[in-house]
Image (cartoon, rainbow, N blue to C red; front, side):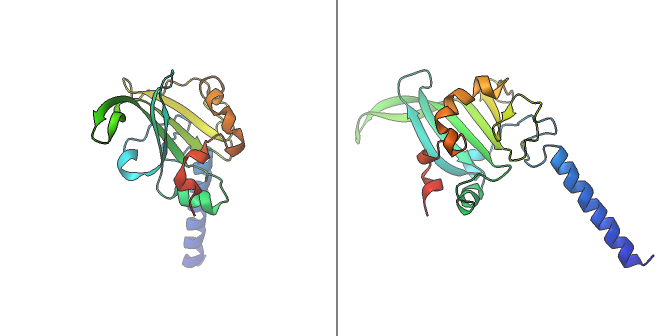
Length: 184
């Protein structure tokens, strides 16, 4: 057999194996393992795109909710007609708040300590059907500041979906609160 043809067949076979392994496992995202366990990204504040913030002043969700996504996701979201790309990761960091009087006004709120992180990973292909943390096009995870490496979510339908129900029409994400996604 001609060496060129043999080399081509070897490369084509390797590409096919790598592609099928990526689809079978969770390697569509560096934050997801082959069983669907989601790892909390750690460098999102410094290296990711800031999407926007929410402030819950006085209830059980009290605090500042800052949301980030990986570089390039906002651009791909806009280019795809408002659809998050497969593998996109969103991190919502919830911080406690404090206030102080400043020269700009009285009772000015500012972020204090990290309380928790929500992490969502877009899954267009339904890769982890048997994992209760995955469904409705996303993987869902929750980490508390006192154990930042432990995902405490157990079932996205119980732990996460209730808060996201009003955003069902926008793929479970409150996109209207993220100026970066809505700018031209």
